[in-house]
Image (cartoon, rainbow, N blue to C red):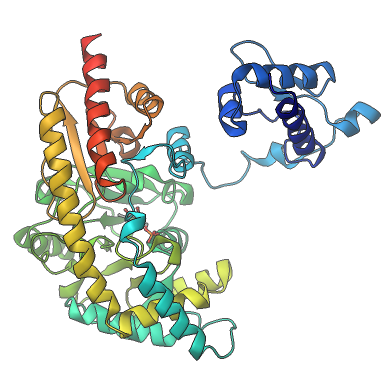
Length: 473
Ligand SMILES: Cc1ncc(COP(=O)(O)O)c(C=O)c1O
């Protein structure tokens, strides 16, 4: 056994306890996680934990998590201090599901083949151009203070031009710059939706993997979706309560199914929503990622009544780390959201806003789209070939015409949790359909955008093996 490592682990854990980062009652990571963290075998961890147990700092039983039972102060004084840990469940905002939290953690684990990530691969990040953009930005820097409530004026002007090219007429005054489309969903849910009201969404939907609407006291109701998008038949039958219902839709390369709403369905959807006076949120963050041909115009492109809020973002097509997105709507609504944004963060990072402006006004963004389109087409081909080679006996899928994802339907359902865990054991990260409210165990969302070419193939080979073993049990 490595003596130095063992002492190092004991010191590390004591330090966490001493600093109040692992408070009394906190669970320690599992022995397996600790062994991975310190790159030692389990016996070294066991020895370290035994020493801490003997000192009275932790307690653990077989099969149950090891917890902190004392800190150095209580060992000396014998009283249990009050800590923030008791408040964890008291806040109004709901936690993500355990599975979503686990996926979020595992997405930064470089040892896993990332078939889950809704993000471009590191080699598709335009590093050189980003360096040039930041260089130009740094040359133009003046003061570096708070921006206007709706966001940097030049960026809003640039977004207005960008949207115009996509058929959407939006003045800078009707655009709010946000820290990603997700922030727009937060602002809308706390600022524009009444408690007890209903948001109709496609089912499955990305928003089911978040608690953003539910935490604002708003319930989600799912409507079926097919290859052409949201089912209008189902929508027509819904008894809406005017003022208490809105529709959230992701019609262009829908997350998780990649379904693309047809032009005719877009027209009918607009007509139905107008007739039923149903306000709409159109989430269009994947629009620029078309692969075969440009998608039909956004629903927002034909909105003359101001009944649609439109969300866009740079996260999927350029950089998620910039945290730059936008929401478009009637001026008064944007004013309201801008006020809430001021109350929450006083605006998105100036540096990111300057960089985003430069990307748009220099023409680099449109050039970059052409480059990533080619790369994604190649990745899609490779991935579909791997699916056909390994997964065809067990599943079906539709080849997407844009976006990142392939929605896999298994011939035989497999418990989502166990599939996820087995995949992770095999070094593979995937998103079970259950996190998007598809509980049957028959669906998985896979992404061809992030993992390397060889990993895409190897990942599917491993997945097929796991599925084969599970169904033959
Ligand atoms: C449909 C959809 N909307 C919004 C977002 C959030 O994007 P952003 O990074 O811009 O907040 C995502 C990210 O996965 C998404 O898939």
